[in-house]
Structure formats: C-alpha cells, structure tokens
Length: 246
Length: 233
Image (cartoon, rainbow over the protein chains, first blue to last red):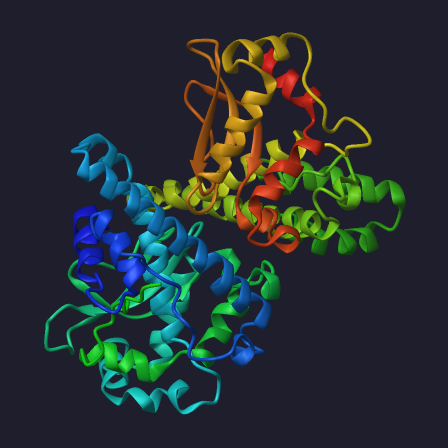
C-alpha cells in the first residue's frame, strides 16, 4: 500500500535545514547535504509505562531496535546520495527497499513513542481528546466498539507489522477515521494521516507477554496518549516525525 | 483438535473402564475424530536439549504454544473451507485462503524445522558429508561460503520469515531462498534446511542480537536429516 515515491518525498520534507554544528554542516555539504536522522528522546522514563510495558522492553525497543533503524537509514541515505552524485540510477534503485524499511522503522517508532503515555496520567485519558473520541463514537458507535475493532485488526496481523488509526488527510483535520494495518515497517504515507499506532512486532511485547499477544493488545489501551492522538486528529499536530539531527 | 481429544478421552476411559479400552478409545479417536486433522508433532529431543544454543524456555513456547496455534489455525481454516464447500459457497472458501496459507505454512515450516535440529551432543552441528557436501561445495564454493550466505540471507529478512536451503528440482542445484511470515517453500524448490527468523525463535535469549542466534544455530543443525531430504528430493 506504500508508494516508494511518496516515502521519498516524505523523507525529503522532513529535512532539517538548520541547527547543525559547524563540523556537521561541512561534512554534510561535501556529502551532498545528506540528512542525518537521530534517535528521538522519550518524553518519559523507560519504566514509566509499567506494568503494561516493561522497562526492559522499552529500553531495548528504543535504545537498540529504533537506534538500528536510524543508523541503517542514515547509512542508506548516504549511499543513495553518493549514487545520485555519480548518476548511478541502478545504485539508487537498489537502495529503495532499504530506505523504505529503515525509514519506515524510524517514522513508525517516532510516532509510536509520542502516542504513548504513563497509565493514569492526564494525557492517557480519552477526555484529553474530546473531538477525536466524538468522531470515533460516530464511526464505531462507542469507544469500546472501536477498541474491539482495532484490537481484532491488531491480532489479525500475520507476521510483523503495525496497526493504525488514520484520518483522511484534509489539511484542516477532522477527516474520516479508518483502521489500517501495515506489514513489517511499511509506514502510513500519502493521503492518510496517522492518529495513533500500535507496534505488533514480537519485540514490542515478547519479553513480557510471550505468545500472549492478546494480553498486550488489551493492556496497551492503558498507555495510549489520547492528547497526542487528539492533536493529530485535529491537525494541530503535524502527525509526522519531527526531524532531529545529530 | 488435540485439545478436544484430551477433553473427551478421560470420559471414554471412565465409561469403558480398562486400559485396553483406552487404547481402543485412542484408536477410535484417531479414525473418527482425527482423520484429516493436523496434529502437533512430538519432538525427538527434550525442550532443554538444544541448550545453550536455544534455551529450553524458547523451545517449549515455540513448540507447545506457537506451533500449536498454527495447528489449531490450520484445522479451523480447513473446517471453514469444508463447510463452505458443502454449501457451495466458494466465495467464502476463497476468503479463507490467507489463513490456510499462514497457518498451513506455519505447521509445515515448524514441522520441518524441529526435524532439521538436533542436540549438539547427538546429531547436531558439524558439517555435512557425502553427496550433500559435494553438492554444497559445487553450488556454493565451500561449506563456509554457504553458511555465510545463509546468515546474510537470514539477517536480511525485513520482518518475520524463514531462510531455506533448497534443491531446485528443475536444475538439480542447491540454492538459498527466504520466505515472508509463514509462506511455505513450494514450486520447484524442495526444502532441505529451514531456519526460523521470527523474533519468537530467539528473542527471550538473544533479544535484538539476532546475529548471535544465527551463528549459534549451526551447532544444532541435524545434517543427517538434511542429507536424507537431499537424497529424496
């Protein structure tokens, strides 16, 4: 469902223009101004989502898995820039899947961290997103009905992937809501705007829930950041990865 | 399904009341209840027998929970298809195809996987010999090259999946293929050796360090099984 052209454009749009150190600036200029993406810092501690997501999972997931996507994305983009400078079209095409996978991994995890919040916090209450919840109730009759439909979609994923609540990409926000799933690290790009994401890769839950992924899906609702989701729905948050550079 | 069997067998045992009757109940079950149904295969080694390369806990969950879920899912998909067929509802039958592929593939892949593993103290590890060794040397250059290419293929899987050493029946040569999720190896390719690259196959022990798992698993590859498959292919 993902068009590589869209992803390419998407990554280009994220390009940070300023705030680089002098060294880095020189470096990127000689390398055709390749953007170096960086691991975003979390707004909460690794153990802040306990007992629903363990600190060990969070630390590995953010510090190792997400970092690997960032590292490999930067590597692939640098190789792509070199291939482009050499007018090596075959070399550029050969890198597209690596860019899609690692770029998707970076985008998806960046969105995921921001749509999580400690259980019991104000942000984790559905009333933090009144407009979104009203739209959900309109589409699925009730918040519980939506949760059931979303959970079923998550449990239906065969292999690694993500479940998403998305809205139509009208610039003003407030568009129609839909549940979609994407495989592996395919991101939501193009017309739809992600409202919130749930990671269904086994590394997201296995150390704590083992093969019991239904329990993970049930518990994740306790740590959804409804405030972030509501802002993405209304379009007051861009719903996209904030570019961070090293 | 075996869980149904486990529930019915004690009732039959009570009703018939003798050990001979238990055997009869078992035989009856295998013809009347189990015919055409997939069942979880037993392992020829203990869950802990592949340690320290694959932990006993991983093996137990992998076999008793994950593989069992594929067996249940396969039987459920087959039943849905049979019911749809009996009603002439071919549209319904066709919509079950992805579940049949996923759970059927999961059952096939894991069944092959358990058999191509063995404890390092028994048949696991080392290198193939005889005709299989010759074929690997001829098609990959050397055993080390083959192993390194297989590890590269495993590391390159983006998401869940498997890597396989296969024999191409058309050309007669060996090759490496990867499959996404539980897609089984089919067509002209005959699977000889499969390695599971799903995170559930290694995460409890190796976490994100999957390259360590891909290195360690060679210590428990059962080359006898692979050679037998090669000769039959």
